[in-house]
Image 1: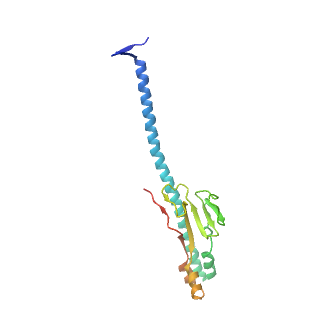
Image 2: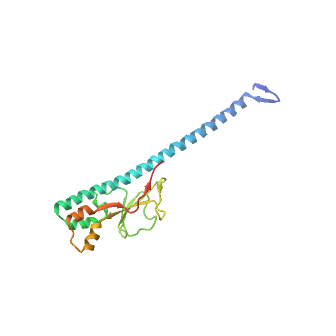
Image 3: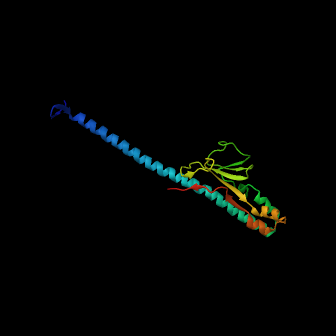
Amino acid sequence: MHSYIRLPGTMRSRHTQAGGSKLFEFVIVVLLFGALSTVVLEYMLHYIEVAEKSAMENTVMNMRSSLRLRLAQVLVRNDVDEGVRLSRDNPMNWLQEMPPNYAGEFDNPEPGAIAKGKWYYDRGKRELVYLVDMGREFVPDEEGGKRVRYRVNAPFLRQAAKENRPLSVNDVVEGVSLIAVVPYEWEFK
């Protein structure tokens, strides 16, 4: 048998009141859980993107270190030809081991042909390219692409040709570097 509480002008059971408050509590819990999940997801995505940027920059640092080691060998061996070869080489070849996200060498690949989060070497442009995966905080380049491009810079080759003189080992050692083709902006707030 139901017990009733008499309210002015209505009859309601305690069972009905309890059911209404439980539903209200459930809705509040769902809303709080949804808000908390959104905040946690936002932090996770931020840290995934920070990790992606760090991994990309770490690969570049490894290539630059390998280049310095190879240039030291050029200097010790007095091997100008090896220095010139380095200046025209795919920087990934300088590494002892290719990163797992290296897709390979291509001749002017079509947009979308290579997955995001991958490195590739564009033989036509002689550029090493990283295709940004997350990139929520990455500013696209002038063509609207989310990518970072690197090129081997070797001004000594142009200078020696311009002066019509043979290359020296010092030209090579001081003149080969890996530079960003266009500075990129990947800043976190």
